[in-house]
Image 1 (cartoon, one colour):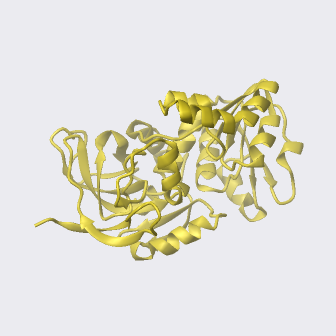
Image 2: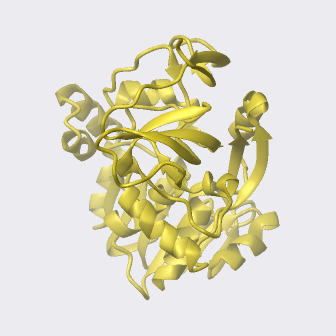
Image 3: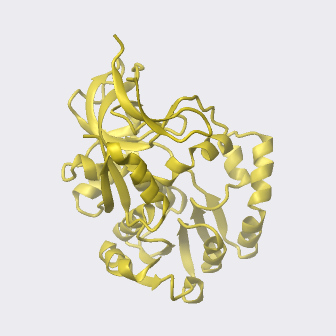
Length: 335
C-alpha cells in the first residue's frame, strides 16, 4: 500500500494551494528521505509560477510548494553515503524541485548539511535559503573583503539580517536601512551605519561604497548604484535579470533579449558610473551550508525568527509573510 503524507499542493497554475494527502516521494540513488521538522516561508513561495516561467523550468502539477527545511533523515538511496539515518539536516531544494511544505522530502545529498549543534530544528529551518543567498551575493559575486564598505538595504528582513552578519564577520563596514523599531536589532547584528528609510534617503548620505547588496529592488536599485565608487559592484535579488544572466543559464535567445531590454536602464546607468550591476538567483549548496554552519557554531551568525506557525495554519503564515515588513523569517513547524 502506498504511504501517504500531508503536503501543501497547488493543483494547477491558477489554483490556490491546499493541504492534501499525497504519496510520499520515492528515492533516487543519490537522495535521502527526510522527515521534515520545519520549513520557512520565502518570497519565492508566493512567486513560483513566475519563477518557473522566467527560468524556463518545466512545472509538473500537482506541485508541492516550499523551498527550504530542517528535519531528520529516515532513509537513503544506494549512493547517498555522505549521511546516515538519524542525522539532523537542513537545506534548500534546487529550483526545479520544490516540496518542503510536506511531512517528507526526498533531496539530493549534495544540497544538505548537518544542522548546527547550537540550533534547534525550528531555528535551523530559517537559515538555508536566506543564508545561501547572502553568502553567494557577498562571497561569490561581490568578493567582499575586510575593510570594504557595503550597503545592504532592508537590513531587518530574512536575507538582509543574514547579510549584515556575514559582512560583519568578514570585517566589512556595513550600512543598512530599517524602520526605527529595528534599529537596535541590526546594530546588534553588526551594522555600523543605520538610517530610518521613513526619514532619510540613503543615497543622500552614503558615498564611495565598494559594494551594494540590493534586497529591495524598485527605485532603491538606481539610488544604490549612485553611491558606489568607480569600479564598485551591485548585486540584486529584487530587481531585473540581465542578458548575461540568461546566457549563463542557457535560457534561450528570446529570454536573453527580453532580459536585456528589461534591464537596459539599469545596465546603462551602471556603465555611465563605471560600476557593475548583476542579478542573483541563488542555488542550492550543501558545501556552502557547511560554511554557514561553522559561522553559526562560532556564534558569528544566527537566524532571526519573527513568528512560527503549525503546519495546519500554513495559509495564515503565507498571508502574514506576504504583507511584508517581516523581521527575519516566518517558520512553519510540521509537528
